[in-house]
Length: 356
Ligand SMILES: Nc1ncnc2c1ncn2[C@@H]1O[C@H](COP(=O)(O)OP(=O)(O)OP(=O)(O)O)[C@@H](O)[C@H]1O
Ligand SMILES: [Mg+2]
Picture 1: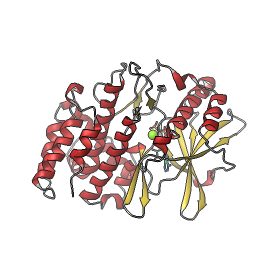
Picture 2: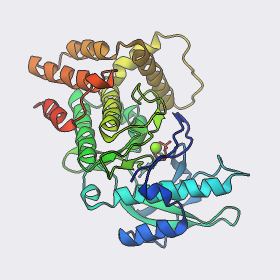
Picture 3: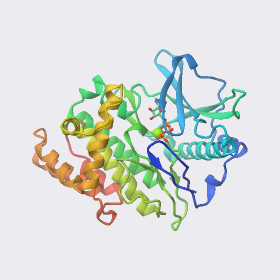
């Protein structure tokens, strides 16, 4: 089965050509998936007064407290793109995306992975003005998404090795998804959530599977979403086989790791740059926007791998073998030509398992 959806803030559009779940875009299919996957229908609601926890291209996320240490995040469909004339299209898109996300996250091999978000259940939203809509309920991440966290005061203080641990955990999660034949298709900092973890400190979890694909046959092809600057350069609205799609996830993973490890260096480079949009009020959003600008430029210039190599070489914290392995990681993930890029993360993971 495979999927994709229309329209998003920073992405281009991809229309599906494929079989399986994405053809199921109605309420009954959604309920059938919930029942078959043992997803609870929860008698709860979120608190409007507490505002939004996050907002993406297709959904709004609100929160509700369960007890002092535990809050829930409610992922609600964003109707504004479809109002007032395209409510029917919006309804189909919503069921397609939510059915697929629910299905993927409840596969037995996926739902127990420490670095992949857990779905806690679903509830319903009924306002009277819009169609009654399902709401996906997740555990709320203590520190929000990686994009905001890394530029928060706590995120900025992370050591190189704590950042490295985040990269390794995300890499393992993507590797696991690929071994289960799932293409995430939208790996970016906003789709990685940061949880507190008693033993290991920070626990990143990959979230937002609304653009993902669960590949069922060898010859199946899919369209993919593309969020700049994280997406692979070969995204041109074409169809991807599983192997080629894996490479696009791997490029995005390399970009996210580059940013996680070297965001301060990238930001420094941005401060000397003219022409950067400064219209953001929140400092973290401004910093993120600057990083996106620089990363997009680097990608366009073809200098990405060289840039990472220089950054790794300048990092005095690393031993020579560590430098070699990290350089290899970036050169295998960030090759602009997909033919030169690695497609199997199992091999790559060993190059990241550097004792730090
Ligand atoms: N469980 C959660 N805990 C805390 N924050 C969350 C949670 N889930 C989502 N968010 C916040 O809400 C934002 C939007 O959620 P999500 O990525 O699932 O929606 P989306 O509209 O599909 O996004 P996109 O624009 O990537 O398509 C996230 O980037 C994050 O900031
Ligand atoms: Mg998202």
